[in-house]
Length: 125
Image 1: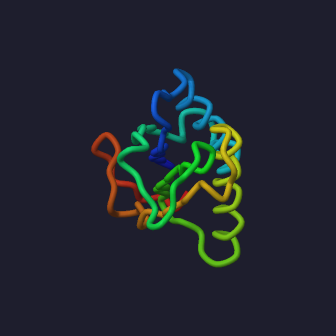
Image 2: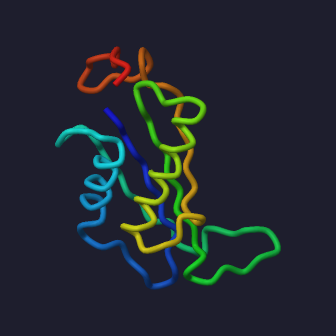
Image 3: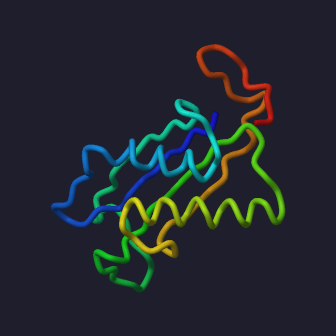
């Protein structure tokens, strides 16, 4: 059930590759150890003119990527640390940015809160 939203800040004139969502879904499925069809990825572009960091002008290579990860039950403690690093590394590799420019936010647990196709998520996997 992992659902992943990825927003890339893009340099002026840049566009998203046509196969980016599929490549990200495949990479994240590997990291999250999910079978085909179990990881859903949505990708959006944010024009660089709509992003800023205080007192800093960013080079194109420094533009960030924001990832929100929705899991039935996110891991806690050490397993979350390991998973967060692996998710950021996988996204960075596919996108071609450094892992320190990939920012991950865990969404609240989906169990009992999210329904897919009208079916409430009740499994912790």
